[in-house]
Length: 76
Image 1 (cartoon, rainbow, N blue to C red):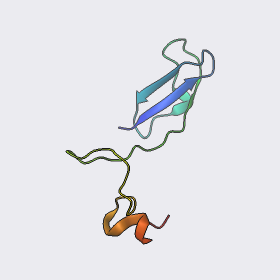
Image 2 (image 1 turned 90 degrees about the horizontal axis):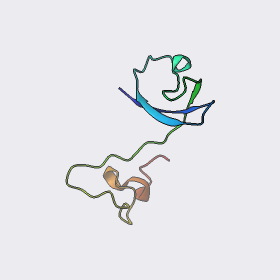
Image 3 (image 1 turned 135 degrees about the horizontal axis):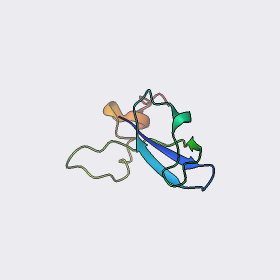
Image 4 (image 1 turned 30 degrees about the horizontal axis):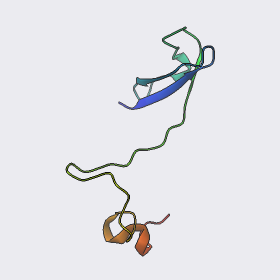
């Protein structure tokens, strides 16, 4: 189940909810005041393998197999 971030249009409270992919965002209400909310856009966090550090990628690229961005394999 994805975690969605919301902001209340009435009291400006920010909160997160675990909701189904099929949940109706327009039916979601603020847990503080019951006001109407807007779903916020969020970025993706990079996946980190167990036992590794979350430091910046090596100078050779983004850490993707085959050299990733540093070798032109990234596609970005």
